[in-house]
Amino acid sequence: MDVIVKVRDPEENLEEKIKAYKVKKRIKTAVTILAFVFALISSYLLVKLQTYTSLRTLQSYKNKETESSDLKYLQYADGMLKYGRDGIAYINKKGVEQWNQSYQIKDPVINVSGKAMAVAERGGNDIYVMDEKGAKGEIHTNYPIEKIAVAENGIVSTILNNENSPMVVCYDATGNVLVEHRASLTGTGYPIGIALSPNGTRLQISYLCVADGVEATRVGYLNFDNTEEANKEYQVADDVYKNTIVPTSFFIDEKKSVLVGDQSFMIYKETDKPKLSKTVKLDKQIKSFFHDDEYLGFILKEESGEYELRLYDMEGNQKLSKTFTGEYGNVKIADGNVIMYDGTSCLIYSKLGVKQFEGTTEYEIKEVIPVFGINKYLVMNADGLAEVRLVK
Image 1 (cartoon, rainbow, N blue to C red):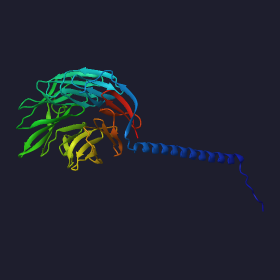
Image 2: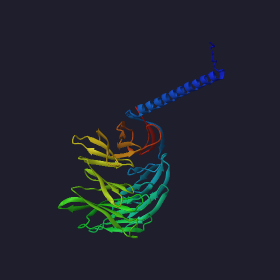
Image 3: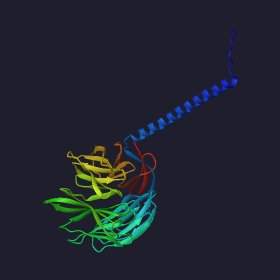
């Protein structure tokens, strides 16, 4: 019987060794990458899940001149607005002025939508409209101004005090009247809140009225997009809420808006016309309300004297509830962080509920802005701008 012995081709054996080597190398590379990613994530979480109590100044930008104590600051575009009785200026993240607009306003009221903004004197007759490039126009009203709202394209709506016949008037940025809506104390009620859609074609008005002998708010929506009747306004919604005052409202986008009452908020959605989508009862006194493009935020007062921070998404679903102590007159949400400050005290929560910072500074805080980098912020104070990092 013949025995056949098969001898492996040396080249075939070499190919298998090379293949096995490549597999081992890929596995080793993958393990190294995974270990590196895990280390990065662990380090990031270690940093983000801690509570910090101090600030380390990385850079500071001092004011060239002593500034008036009445100046206020507001995060805007890629920097912030600085405004007071004598004018308004846009400064970048190094404190350098990009433009300024002078005026004489005793009690300035400001409204921002996207890159457009308007400032007016409460009780006065002048409105100044700007964007990140500077002045867009000025508006002069015939009656005293009570409230203003601006759209992203610079259209401005205002409530004007005309004794027993208050008015809501819309202007373009240069002062031309686009829409004039007269309210009636015995009919619609007195307008107490207004909001414009981003493109300025929809106007929401809240009226204080009496319904069935009790105080109520009438919510109306007007449409000016000229789709049905050219150059003519028409009302597309009219709802009444008894025992509720709704002074605050804003548009999330062209088709969705939010109205905030004394102990609840409502979300309206639009297909052919605005309709109530959801009402959320808060059952606690609202101390302050704030929002960004993703979240609705509330500071609610507890019976114990403490406060509750509560966040909702834009569909009205609760996402966060945290109890804290201390009075904070300024509250905002920016880059997923809820920032509270008052005087020298500051408290910061992440949108996940992690208390990132609780402490005090050596100066009175005017504004706080998150910037690129882990735990980095810009803090505006009376002396200038400081870039800081949260530390233990």
